Image 1: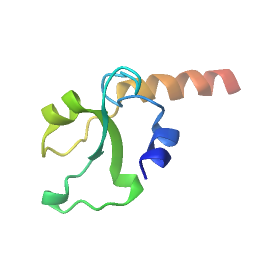
Image 2: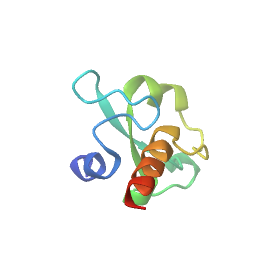
Image 3: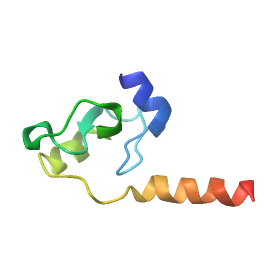
Image 4: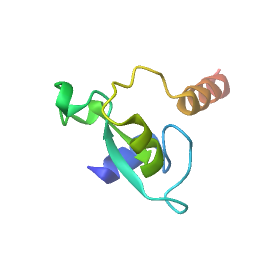
Length: 79
């Protein structure tokens, strides 16, 4: 599962962008299990340990700025 998420999300934290060579990355539930979230891949993301610790059991409704910028850049390249 971790490898699938790394391929999908990139090799870094979805919040701060630190990569797997500089810090421990963890799997986080976007909608926490304690609040009814599932283990489905669509509910999982890669976060570094400090970002995951800060998020705790909160629901992540804030879009990832790093990925929004990357996706926007890719879209502009295609057009």
